[in-house]
Length: 114
Length: 113
Image (cartoon, rainbow over all chains, first blue to last red; front, side):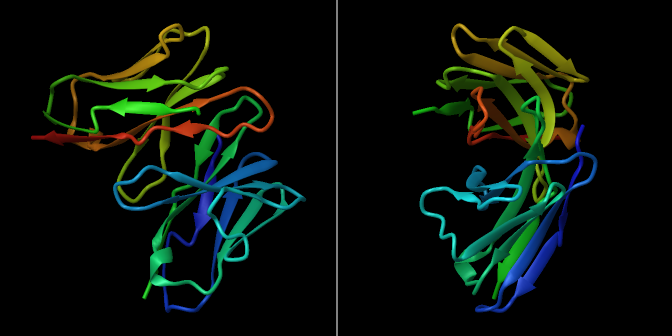
């Protein structure tokens, strides 16, 4: 199956700073990547759909100016949490889909905002 | 509204025992149904994927079934191991280019020695 990597795996930052999370497709070119957020003991919540070469599509309630998504190449999508606050502390997971509608997830990034 | 309901919400079993997790969905039209295992602090890992025409699929000790008529799926775990302790998530997708899957809330499984 496809392999997706995320970096960093965990990050701790001060309130007000920005954090960038990278999601890479290691073995195939993903035209579409999804970004999810997961709070403890909760289901994955879709934040946005990232399309290579175009603007991301955000789910209702997700601030596009706070969660900046860039999908500049077929193998890399980035999520930047701007001016992070403690309530942004969560587990962020990206995923890619194949042309057969298989979905592969990255290992996730644990963000803690102090 | 497309929904995926999983039961039970949590389950505790003894090592070596079998268990079955349920997934009911209302997603229509239907493309595929997937079961994932998510360890704490990790991303979900695919266990099985089934299309409309498939009734059962196995992956080692994991066997998934699908009844597309009743829109139900189950995941059966045989001879459970301590490492099976995780959250099991059912995901259902509709066909089409927009492709946004619908996630269940997951079943939290704890296997005790």
